[in-house]
Image 1 (spheres, one colour):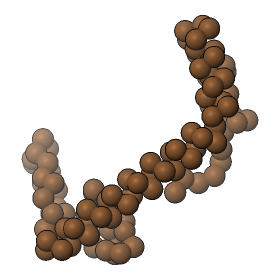
Image 2 (cartoon, one colour; image 1 turned 90 degrees about the vertical axis):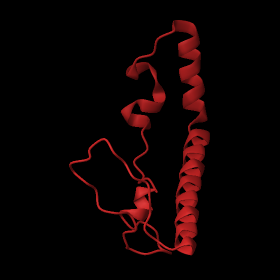
Image 3 (cartoon, rainbow, N blue to C red; image 1 turned 30 degrees about the vertical axis):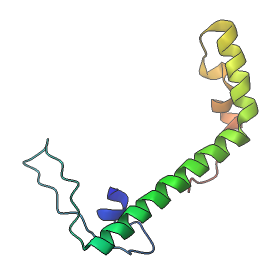
Image 4 (cartoon, rainbow, N blue to C red; image 1 turned 30 degrees about the horizontal axis):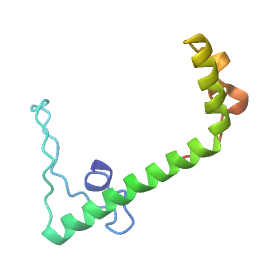
Length: 102
């Protein structure tokens, strides 16, 4: 939510801050209250939902594209009950994807 309300990371709402400034002396207290009209709050909710949905879809795409590596890791785990980075192809340097996230 802070991506939208504090940092303005939504194209529709633009680079505007809707969250009140943080209070450094209230370190344990968190306020999720947004200072905006009801229609703007709805737009913020939609923007947050869109960000979460896009991230979930991206994660699903990555998992589907790396399914073979994940299945190999599962086989090793079932056989040995432990797994090192060297044994898991999905995290070996030659298998890592270098494309940007987003």
